[in-house]
Image (spheres, rainbow, N blue to C red):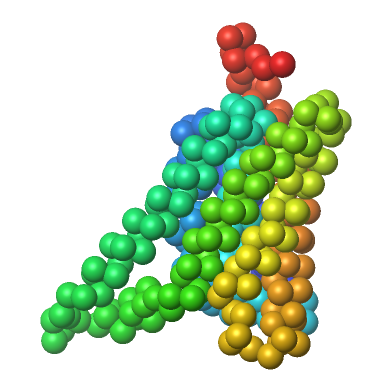
Amino acid sequence: MFNEWLWLLFAIVNFSLILIIYRLFGKAGLFVWIGMSTVVANIQVLKVVELFGVTATLGNIIYGTIFLATDILNEKYGRNEAKKAVWLGFFTLITMTIMMQVALLFIPSPDDTVQGALSALFSLVPQIAIGSLVAYLISQNFDVWMYQKIKRKFSGDQYLWLRNNGSTMISQLLDTAVFCLIAFWGMFPIQVWLEIFVSTYLIKFIVSAIDTPFIYAAKSMHKNKLQPNEQQA
């Protein structure tokens, strides 16, 4: 059970750090977090661990925090700011990918000790790279749209959990489906593919549920810090 307890602590730390950066830097902090998380998630996803009896990747936690950050932006600043953050994350991921591919082309010195490690981390498997980029773009934009759609019908603070969980859990399902279809279709027998799909979404679903108290905490912060000219309907 060591991995499971560490994973839970890791999730709490990740979501707590979002609250800290939001508290200290406001909207700008969330933009920075989203850019950073898109890069870190795509590095962490390379590490495979056993969780709850299934094989999973570590990147699911920090990737899930992106949905929380965009939901906070959507709640306070509106759909346009949340969409801007999504595109910022996408551009950051593209930029990191290009820069690291160029870095790998340099011939290392005979004294170099990290080329092999960098190559293992950043050498592209085109099918997986495309799957990651497409899944991010589709699911994050869908999350922004779905959050606003739910908010129009359930706008009160008592429905904040519904807006957050509803948009994120559906978006994570879409993300998992798109990624697995592009990245893994044809690489495994259908039974193995289904196991990867189900286990991946199960972990993301749990992460989505864990973030619920954190969006309430962020909402409380935003009320305390809101200026009169920032009030929203």
